[in-house]
Length: 84
Image (cartoon, rainbow, N blue to C red; front, side, top):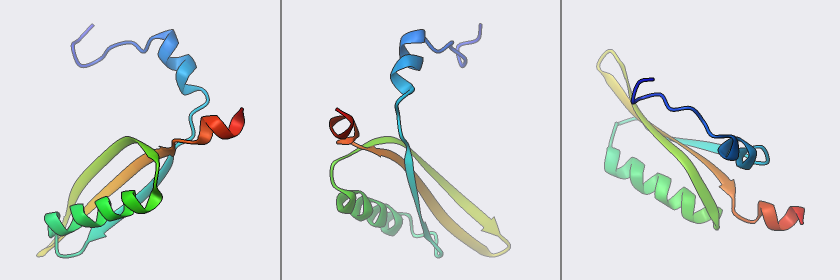
């Protein structure tokens, strides 16, 4: 098996069964990455107590135009407390 592909353990699968994933995306039409990062940080702070699951970043180039985009995947930290 290659180093880039590792099997997922049964324990990890069981822990993930109850997960709920939310997502939001932010873009900056001028590809100003520092400004985009500030926007994402502000949005995360506004959401409050969350667990960040993943963050993606991409630059979309169409002709002379470049747009920077970030997507944040998260879950609310209190989901487990509400289901008890």
